[in-house]
Amino acid sequence: MTTTLSQRVSQSAFDGSMLRVVLLMDLHEGAQQRFFEAYEQLRHDIAAVPGHISDQLCQSFENPSQWLITSEWESAPQYLAWVNSEHHAEQVRPLGACARSMRPLKYTVLRETGRGYDHAQRPGLARLQGAPRLGAGIVRHALTFTVKPGSEKEVAAILSSYASPAARVDDHTRLCRTSLFMHGNRVVRTVEVRGDLMAALRHVSEQPEVRAVEEAINPYLEQDRDLGDPESARMFFMRAALPAVHHVAADEADADDVRRHALFYPAKPGCGPALAKFLARQDEAAAHGQGGATVSSSIFQRDDIVVRLVDVRGPQGADPETAFGVHDPRKAGVLARLMAVPAGEPGKAGKSGKPGKSGKTGRPAGSALSAARHAMSLITDRRAPAEH
Image 1 (spheres, one colour):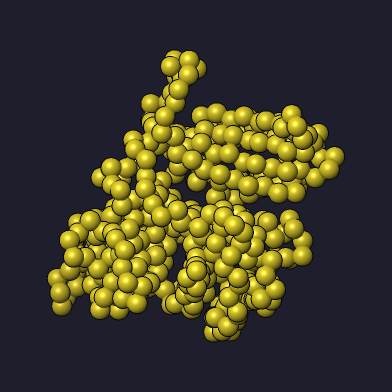
Image 2 (tube, rainbow, N blue to C red):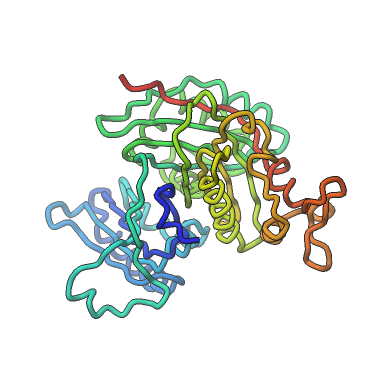
């Protein structure tokens, strides 16, 4: 399925397009030489990362504290696999220590013009995005982290009781929606922003009510953090980032008639990107279906953590199995092979490698696992008030 031909897909990491990444940095006073030396130590390691094509380090000729790193990648999944890795977090720590602020921007490449491109020797797998994607100008992002087992009820109570921050960030940016889910001791918070995502996240983090909540859940986190230490906070949120890799929308629907669900899919080691791509294709097919219940779907993926956020229309919105179960036996088998299903649970592949059958329905048990077992509990879903 070629996602770029569909106007319903406003974001996709799976179309094979080259990716251009731009990192804007404002350095601490006097840190220029230290930053340059840190980059010199890293650039050859970065050049050896699979999928990396080129890298440029640039310094503003107007302001020596402003720097720019641009890199080009064969495809988005290759870049995301690197940037979301623990190795990357440690690699860039020396660079981050020099920076007052960092703003990453990611673009797929549609066209190239100029003599340098006419004779460029591109890797065989790198290609241009076929057509512009359309959308409503909404940026989606998520964070995920785990809390100490046994603390789930206390954490859910804290996360559902705070006052919503102001929706308006500035003249160009607005926080549109925040949804928070839990699955066991895993927390997933998704945000939808119109405008500048980084400005919105910074705005939210500065709100007193949000800071109070973050401090309140600190004792329950499995990964320690100190929000008073900028480097500790930066590393925590870097590791917690859960990027959106695909979004498809069928059409507009009355908000009162739509229900939001999230599903958590732990992938087998190394299968996270393939699982995310598989689910993206299922939801794109559902969005194209006539009279279907799916209004929109966003897939978030980092390493082997995949989260599927689905808005469903009408009465079917209350039935995960009907709305987004995978009923085709072959597809259910693919899903079962990609997912990390604990031993002894229904749907685990047997010695033949094929998923088990449900005695009552004859459908692969993986179909039920894809919906009911992975449905997350909704903690809070907040929409910004309508603009006047």
